[in-house]
Image (tube, rainbow, N blue to C red; front, side, top):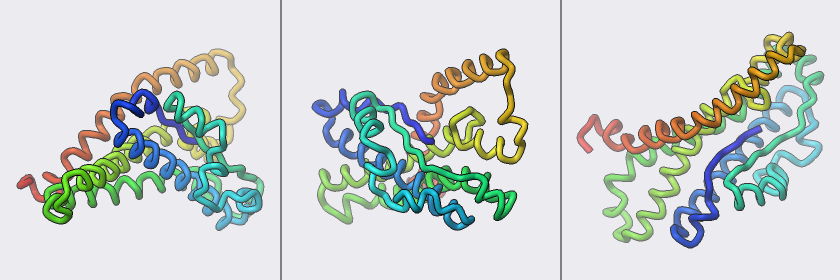
Length: 222
């Protein structure tokens, strides 16, 4: 599962370039995240996601209509692929956590690629394209791709039920799946709200990292 907390609809008329760029980036990132889950599960012998058509980047399949509508209206989106953990465990004890971590790995790959590309292109874009409008559009997409995927990588690795970090840990420590204490469940609910409250700081950190990419890649000369 993967989530984001952008609020895009308010930007549609005030900042259409931002709206279009952010929508493309988030939808693509979610679909690739889920594709990596499905592809890794197939590699380890679980054909469930593949049989149900999840080896695709089609947002209608990876996200569904409800998630897409929620994203456009409220800036909240998710994706999910079916996994049969019995097939995974039959193949390898590491298969289950690796499938859980495959989605965040996709986000890390997109972040790293965007970081390097933004750092290289930002000082040179307008010389290469000689068009401020096109250059701004391209840099906006790359910047958002890096920032959003840095956020999604960190967010999904948090040990909170429903996120990939929790799934990876619970597959390594099965007793986590049998927690029944009401006190512990209440603490987990508070933890989830705490994570959501901290999400804006994760966004800020991700944005700062991308902003400094040109300077970092040029040794501070940019």
